Image 1: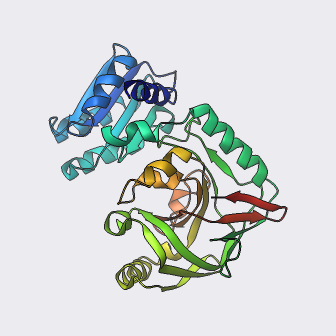
Image 2: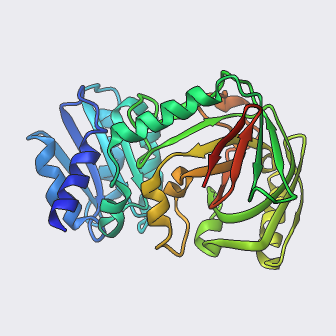
Length: 323
């Protein structure tokens, strides 16, 4: 068991940029004791640790401002989100260049080894291979199963797919593994079996969504109706659509490529940020991908990912993915 843990720490460090010589590490004292003991000695002699729960909010804010323009300083953040009083200070790290940041949300000692169970290079190869497959595909269709009557079709620009393997300068959110684009349009019916994650806490409240609980009707890239057995979930989602109209728009078609995340998701009742990397399709409502859209032109700052736990994705040339 100890060997598995040490190997996962080594795999995590493979994502860290070699250009960084000094690390600022943010951890949750209660959630990351074992991780801190294993990881910090691997980062070299020049490491500063901010332990949430012990350090002051002012110290966190000051560190974000002090190092933002120092290219040799990188940030490793493990946030278990147990300390809301730090939120305003932590947001200031958004000004740091992504190439110097490795951020792990809802990752802690109990799930770290399983989430980093895959070789980063293998995940990268999987992402690149899928991106190459998708190049040239304009029309994609999702079904929950081969014989499912309901389907959701997407029109995508063939060359707009972006790979996120954790090894790119722009991909700072770990664990990684997905290929995504902003679809030009989408229409059909989406029966949701899986999870909803994002800036509105559906994942924490509802966890895994079962077959029949929720179905979303989509026309011309907009959610137009919500039905399902879970009336409270349907009501909450419809309320989000009504109060935040920009969330009705589909801003992402993503295809997760992390088989490690798929394994871990089975043992968690709630849904977390890393569920987005689950092997299979997820559909983003609201804010578009930052790498493919101008943030100043977004209709909303909110983003919800509908992560689908099973299904089939086909292109014009035939099947692309089954999970």
